[in-house]
Image 1 (cartoon, one colour):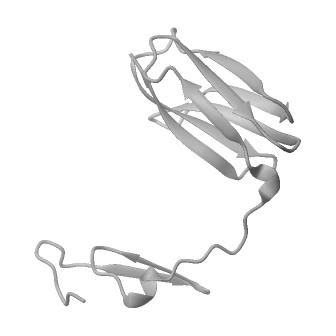
Image 2: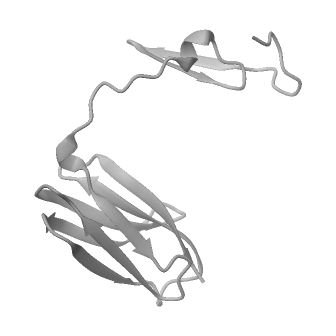
Length: 128
């Protein structure tokens, strides 16, 4: 393990209960131990976003094996929600269309959240 690195003189470690976050290139050997403690199989959603990049319309096609209620938001780079679809219910294939043609060119983020407000997925969308 390296004892120093050129250009990175400060490393910060933050502790909160059993959680340890170390920022920087130099990581302790414990940082390589990654474990997943819980996956909610009811929140598994397979989806596609297309076309990306887009000049106007963006389509979200999703499929879920279980009945899930979720929120879809499109957020600009300043963190403002510009489009929001609430209480989307799915247990089959679905297609949702978003019209971005009235918005400025740039990067946007499509976020899927479950009914608990937990982010299931976030995808970058480029508007041309």
